[in-house]
Image (cartoon, rainbow, N blue to C red; front, side, top):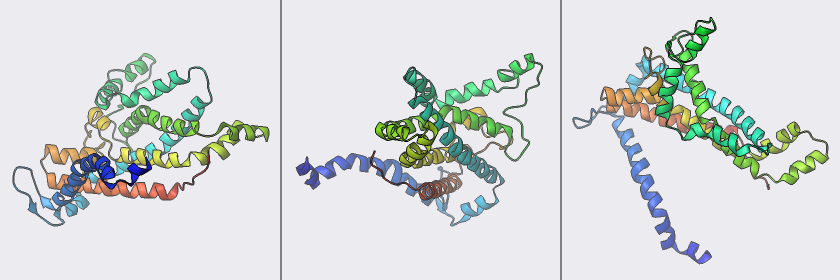
Length: 294
């Protein structure tokens, strides 16, 4: 094995497929998007360099401001709720013996289901004349317009979609935390119990410090996923009513594939890329990790 690791040709051979995949699927498209963001381009005629025109348009785009606000709301909501619920479920399922795999699979199941199908399902559930409102009507309660109310700084449809996103993706965070918790040496907990620690204190002083690297990883994944969030919103509201539930990804889609403003859509994509890099760097800076022997 050591001889193989010292063989440069073997190293290049093993790295080549991943490197080529990264180059042609990620790096080159990113570079093209950055270039097109400085161009007036509709995909039907050759791209014409227009300087910072697209970025100046970004500053005056009212829909972009709504989309940015909603994306930042998703970012904060997702990071906080996924962290709390994911840790709670991971700690709960780690400490039960009977039915652990059943509950784990039930919670994780929505993660592997189609977001498009789930979006349509929840759209019917929160429809004014179906689902939840029918149940409320039978109880003598008039249900709200779950996906059409436009009152408030963060409107009701955004809270509804955020709840559905939490329900779908909390299993992913739970699985990451469970994998890290299962790697902690049980003797640490036994020693803490002998010293008189309760399970709550053991979780605070043993589990949390030891899973901090996974917390940083999970939060980064949640942050990036929330910033490029698209499927559920597009299928539940399509950015409506009146663009009130637009996020950066849906606004990018509308500009690029509906209005054929590929240059402007590329500028939105660059903004999204920069936000992802900033948020990831911020999380890695705030959630400081240390390596411990487990």
